[in-house]
Image (cartoon, rainbow, N blue to C red; front, side, top):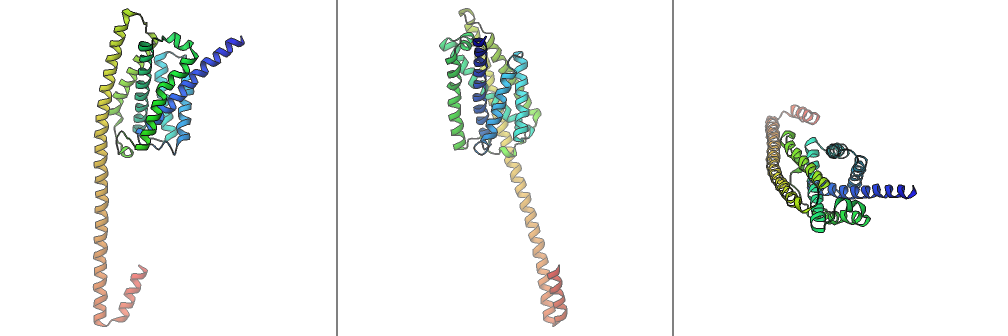
Length: 284
Protein backbone atom coordinates (compact mmCIF):
# COMPACT_ATOMS: atom_id res chain seq x y z
CA UNK A 1 0.00 0.00 0.00
CA UNK A 2 2.81 2.34 0.86
CA UNK A 3 4.58 1.52 -2.39
CA UNK A 4 1.37 2.08 -4.36
CA UNK A 5 0.78 5.41 -2.66
CA UNK A 6 4.37 6.48 -3.30
CA UNK A 7 4.07 5.51 -6.96
CA UNK A 8 0.82 7.46 -7.30
CA UNK A 9 2.32 10.54 -5.67
CA UNK A 10 5.37 10.29 -7.91
CA UNK A 11 3.16 9.87 -10.97
CA UNK A 12 1.14 13.03 -10.27
CA UNK A 13 4.23 14.87 -9.04
CA UNK A 14 5.84 14.31 -12.45
CA UNK A 15 2.68 15.56 -14.14
CA UNK A 16 2.77 18.68 -11.97
CA UNK A 17 6.48 19.20 -12.71
CA UNK A 18 5.86 18.83 -16.45
CA UNK A 19 2.80 21.08 -16.59
CA UNK A 20 4.26 23.86 -14.45
CA UNK A 21 7.65 24.24 -16.13
CA UNK A 22 6.25 24.11 -19.65
CA UNK A 23 3.36 26.48 -18.96
CA UNK A 24 5.57 29.05 -17.24
CA UNK A 25 7.94 29.08 -20.23
CA UNK A 26 5.12 29.02 -22.82
CA UNK A 27 3.44 31.95 -21.07
CA UNK A 28 6.68 33.92 -20.69
CA UNK A 29 7.51 33.58 -24.39
CA UNK A 30 3.98 34.48 -25.51
CA UNK A 31 3.85 37.54 -23.24
CA UNK A 32 7.29 38.69 -24.41
CA UNK A 33 6.27 38.45 -28.06
CA UNK A 34 3.16 40.49 -27.21
CA UNK A 35 5.15 43.31 -25.61
CA UNK A 36 4.64 42.48 -21.93
CA UNK A 37 7.52 43.18 -19.53
CA UNK A 38 8.07 39.78 -17.93
CA UNK A 39 11.15 40.97 -16.01
CA UNK A 40 9.18 43.53 -14.01
CA UNK A 41 6.28 41.12 -13.52
CA UNK A 42 8.03 37.74 -13.21
CA UNK A 43 6.16 36.82 -10.03
CA UNK A 44 2.82 37.21 -11.78
CA UNK A 45 4.05 35.17 -14.76
CA UNK A 46 5.28 32.43 -12.43
CA UNK A 47 2.01 32.46 -10.46
CA UNK A 48 -0.22 32.18 -13.55
CA UNK A 49 1.96 29.44 -15.06
CA UNK A 50 1.82 27.51 -11.78
CA UNK A 51 -1.96 27.90 -11.53
CA UNK A 52 -2.38 26.62 -15.06
CA UNK A 53 -0.03 23.70 -14.34
CA UNK A 54 -2.05 22.74 -11.26
CA UNK A 55 -5.25 22.98 -13.31
CA UNK A 56 -3.71 20.58 -15.83
CA UNK A 57 -3.26 17.98 -13.07
CA UNK A 58 -6.73 18.59 -11.58
CA UNK A 59 -8.45 18.21 -14.98
CA UNK A 60 -6.24 15.34 -16.15
CA UNK A 61 -8.76 12.50 -15.80
CA UNK A 62 -11.55 14.30 -17.65
CA UNK A 63 -12.31 13.20 -21.23
CA UNK A 64 -9.47 14.51 -23.35
CA UNK A 65 -11.40 16.81 -25.70
CA UNK A 66 -13.47 18.29 -22.88
CA UNK A 67 -10.32 18.65 -20.75
CA UNK A 68 -8.46 20.58 -23.45
CA UNK A 69 -11.36 22.96 -24.06
CA UNK A 70 -11.89 23.50 -20.33
CA UNK A 71 -8.18 24.12 -19.74
CA UNK A 72 -7.84 26.76 -22.42
CA UNK A 73 -11.06 28.55 -21.48
CA UNK A 74 -9.77 28.59 -17.90
CA UNK A 75 -6.41 29.87 -19.16
CA UNK A 76 -8.07 32.71 -21.13
CA UNK A 77 -9.99 34.01 -18.11
CA UNK A 78 -6.95 33.56 -15.85
CA UNK A 79 -4.89 35.68 -18.26
CA UNK A 80 -7.56 38.35 -18.40
CA UNK A 81 -8.02 38.46 -14.62
CA UNK A 82 -4.37 38.45 -13.49
CA UNK A 83 -2.92 40.70 -16.21
CA UNK A 84 -5.91 43.00 -16.76
CA UNK A 85 -5.78 42.66 -20.55
CA UNK A 86 -8.61 43.55 -22.89
CA UNK A 87 -10.62 40.76 -24.53
CA UNK A 88 -8.64 41.23 -27.75
CA UNK A 89 -5.27 41.13 -26.00
CA UNK A 90 -6.29 38.12 -23.90
CA UNK A 91 -7.36 36.24 -27.04
CA UNK A 92 -4.05 37.09 -28.71
CA UNK A 93 -1.97 35.95 -25.72
CA UNK A 94 -4.02 32.74 -25.40
CA UNK A 95 -3.55 32.08 -29.11
CA UNK A 96 0.20 32.71 -28.78
CA UNK A 97 0.56 30.30 -25.84
CA UNK A 98 -1.54 27.70 -27.67
CA UNK A 99 0.66 28.02 -30.76
CA UNK A 100 3.90 27.67 -28.79
CA UNK A 101 2.50 24.69 -26.84
CA UNK A 102 1.30 22.93 -29.98
CA UNK A 103 4.56 23.40 -31.87
CA UNK A 104 6.75 22.39 -28.92
CA UNK A 105 4.76 19.40 -27.66
CA UNK A 106 3.85 17.92 -31.06
CA UNK A 107 7.44 18.20 -32.29
CA UNK A 108 8.82 16.65 -29.10
CA UNK A 109 6.38 13.74 -29.15
CA UNK A 110 6.86 13.16 -32.87
CA UNK A 111 10.62 12.85 -32.33
CA UNK A 112 10.10 10.73 -29.22
CA UNK A 113 7.71 8.31 -30.91
CA UNK A 114 8.91 8.05 -34.50
CA UNK A 115 12.63 8.75 -34.23
CA UNK A 116 13.44 7.28 -30.82
CA UNK A 117 10.66 4.70 -30.69
CA UNK A 118 9.19 5.48 -27.27
CA UNK A 119 5.51 4.55 -26.95
CA UNK A 120 3.11 6.42 -24.63
CA UNK A 121 3.07 3.40 -22.30
CA UNK A 122 6.85 3.27 -22.00
CA UNK A 123 6.95 7.05 -21.62
CA UNK A 124 4.66 7.04 -18.58
CA UNK A 125 6.51 4.04 -17.11
CA UNK A 126 9.94 5.71 -17.20
CA UNK A 127 10.92 8.22 -14.52
CA UNK A 128 14.00 9.43 -16.44
CA UNK A 129 12.14 10.04 -19.69
CA UNK A 130 9.39 11.99 -17.95
CA UNK A 131 11.97 14.19 -16.24
CA UNK A 132 14.23 14.75 -19.25
CA UNK A 133 11.71 14.96 -22.10
CA UNK A 134 10.04 18.27 -21.06
CA UNK A 135 13.48 19.85 -20.62
CA UNK A 136 14.30 19.01 -24.24
CA UNK A 137 11.87 21.68 -25.47
CA UNK A 138 11.48 23.86 -22.35
CA UNK A 139 15.17 24.83 -22.19
CA UNK A 140 15.40 25.97 -25.86
CA UNK A 141 12.15 27.92 -25.43
CA UNK A 142 13.48 29.52 -22.24
CA UNK A 143 16.59 30.61 -24.16
CA UNK A 144 14.37 31.93 -26.97
CA UNK A 145 12.35 33.87 -24.39
CA UNK A 146 15.50 35.45 -22.99
CA UNK A 147 16.76 36.41 -26.46
CA UNK A 148 13.32 37.77 -27.41
CA UNK A 149 13.22 39.90 -24.27
CA UNK A 150 16.76 41.24 -24.73
CA UNK A 151 16.27 42.02 -28.42
CA UNK A 152 12.70 43.26 -27.92
CA UNK A 153 11.19 40.93 -30.49
CA UNK A 154 7.48 41.58 -30.94
CA UNK A 155 4.72 40.12 -33.08
CA UNK A 156 4.11 43.73 -34.06
CA UNK A 157 5.28 47.04 -32.65
CA UNK A 158 2.02 48.77 -31.74
CA UNK A 159 0.82 46.03 -29.40
CA UNK A 160 -0.51 48.56 -26.90
CA UNK A 161 -2.85 50.03 -29.51
CA UNK A 162 -4.09 46.71 -30.88
CA UNK A 163 -7.73 46.81 -31.90
CA UNK A 164 -8.71 43.56 -33.63
CA UNK A 165 -12.41 42.63 -33.53
CA UNK A 166 -12.82 39.37 -31.62
CA UNK A 167 -15.09 38.03 -34.37
CA UNK A 168 -12.23 38.35 -36.86
CA UNK A 169 -9.70 36.55 -34.70
CA UNK A 170 -11.97 33.91 -33.14
CA UNK A 171 -12.12 31.50 -36.16
CA UNK A 172 -8.32 31.23 -36.10
CA UNK A 173 -8.40 30.41 -32.39
CA UNK A 174 -11.09 27.77 -32.94
CA UNK A 175 -9.06 26.20 -35.74
CA UNK A 176 -6.01 26.07 -33.49
CA UNK A 177 -8.13 24.42 -30.79
CA UNK A 178 -9.27 21.74 -33.25
CA UNK A 179 -5.71 21.07 -34.42
CA UNK A 180 -4.49 20.88 -30.82
CA UNK A 181 -7.26 18.41 -29.92
CA UNK A 182 -6.59 16.35 -33.04
CA UNK A 183 -2.86 16.14 -32.33
CA UNK A 184 -3.49 15.08 -28.73
CA UNK A 185 -5.98 12.43 -29.83
CA UNK A 186 -3.54 11.30 -32.48
CA UNK A 187 -0.69 10.72 -30.06
CA UNK A 188 -2.77 9.23 -27.27
CA UNK A 189 -4.63 6.78 -29.51
CA UNK A 190 -1.85 5.94 -31.94
CA UNK A 191 -0.78 2.36 -32.59
CA UNK A 192 2.79 2.29 -33.69
CA UNK A 193 2.88 -0.73 -36.00
CA UNK A 194 4.27 -0.53 -39.52
CA UNK A 195 0.87 -0.81 -41.22
CA UNK A 196 -0.44 2.47 -39.76
CA UNK A 197 2.77 4.46 -39.34
CA UNK A 198 2.71 6.01 -42.84
CA UNK A 199 -0.91 7.08 -42.43
CA UNK A 200 -0.10 8.68 -39.08
CA UNK A 201 2.85 10.55 -40.55
CA UNK A 202 0.63 11.79 -43.41
CA UNK A 203 -2.06 12.98 -40.98
CA UNK A 204 0.54 14.74 -38.87
CA UNK A 205 2.02 16.40 -41.98
CA UNK A 206 -1.39 17.66 -43.10
CA UNK A 207 -2.11 19.02 -39.63
CA UNK A 208 1.26 20.74 -39.62
CA UNK A 209 0.63 22.34 -43.02
CA UNK A 210 -2.78 23.51 -41.83
CA UNK A 211 -1.17 24.93 -38.70
CA UNK A 212 1.43 26.92 -40.64
CA UNK A 213 -1.22 28.25 -43.01
CA UNK A 214 -3.19 29.43 -39.99
CA UNK A 215 -0.10 31.04 -38.50
CA UNK A 216 0.63 32.81 -41.79
CA UNK A 217 -2.93 34.12 -41.98
CA UNK A 218 -2.70 35.24 -38.34
CA UNK A 219 0.58 37.01 -39.07
CA UNK A 220 -1.05 38.87 -41.96
CA UNK A 221 -3.97 39.88 -39.74
CA UNK A 222 -1.57 41.14 -37.07
CA UNK A 223 0.52 43.05 -39.61
CA UNK A 224 -2.62 44.74 -40.93
CA UNK A 225 -3.75 45.52 -37.37
CA UNK A 226 -0.31 46.94 -36.63
CA UNK A 227 -0.45 49.28 -39.64
CA UNK A 228 -3.95 50.35 -38.68
CA UNK A 229 -2.75 51.06 -35.15
CA UNK A 230 0.13 53.20 -36.45
CA UNK A 231 -2.23 55.18 -38.71
CA UNK A 232 -4.68 55.67 -35.84
CA UNK A 233 -1.87 56.87 -33.57
CA UNK A 234 -0.63 59.31 -36.21
CA UNK A 235 -4.14 60.67 -36.76
CA UNK A 236 -4.61 61.13 -33.02
CA UNK A 237 -1.29 62.96 -32.77
CA UNK A 238 -2.17 65.19 -35.73
CA UNK A 239 -5.53 66.05 -34.15
CA UNK A 240 -3.83 66.96 -30.87
CA UNK A 241 -1.34 69.16 -32.74
CA UNK A 242 -4.20 70.91 -34.57
CA UNK A 243 -5.89 71.66 -31.25
CA UNK A 244 -2.64 73.04 -29.82
CA UNK A 245 -2.12 75.25 -32.88
CA UNK A 246 -5.70 76.56 -32.67
CA UNK A 247 -5.19 77.31 -28.97
CA UNK A 248 -1.95 79.19 -29.73
CA UNK A 249 -3.65 81.18 -32.48
CA UNK A 250 -6.45 82.16 -30.12
CA UNK A 251 -3.95 83.24 -27.44
CA UNK A 252 -1.96 85.21 -30.01
CA UNK A 253 -5.11 87.01 -31.19
CA UNK A 254 -6.09 87.93 -27.61
CA UNK A 255 -2.54 89.07 -26.84
CA UNK A 256 -2.48 91.39 -29.88
CA UNK A 257 -5.83 92.90 -28.85
CA UNK A 258 -4.53 93.61 -25.33
CA UNK A 259 -1.37 95.21 -26.70
CA UNK A 260 -3.37 97.45 -29.06
CA UNK A 261 -5.66 98.59 -26.23
CA UNK A 262 -2.73 99.30 -23.90
CA UNK A 263 -0.92 101.20 -26.68
CA UNK A 264 -4.02 103.31 -27.39
CA UNK A 265 -4.53 104.19 -23.71
CA UNK A 266 -0.88 105.18 -23.38
CA UNK A 267 -0.92 107.37 -26.48
CA UNK A 268 -4.03 109.19 -25.25
CA UNK A 269 -2.64 109.63 -21.72
CA UNK A 270 -5.53 107.86 -20.03
CA UNK A 271 -3.44 106.49 -17.18
CA UNK A 272 -6.28 105.70 -14.76
CA UNK A 273 -8.12 103.62 -17.35
CA UNK A 274 -4.83 101.93 -18.26
CA UNK A 275 -4.21 101.00 -14.61
CA UNK A 276 -7.72 99.58 -14.27
CA UNK A 277 -7.29 97.64 -17.50
CA UNK A 278 -3.95 96.14 -16.46
CA UNK A 279 -5.37 95.26 -13.03
CA UNK A 280 -8.33 93.55 -14.71
CA UNK A 281 -5.94 91.53 -16.88
CA UNK A 282 -4.00 90.40 -13.80
CA UNK A 283 -7.15 89.34 -11.98
CA UNK A 284 -8.71 87.73 -15.06
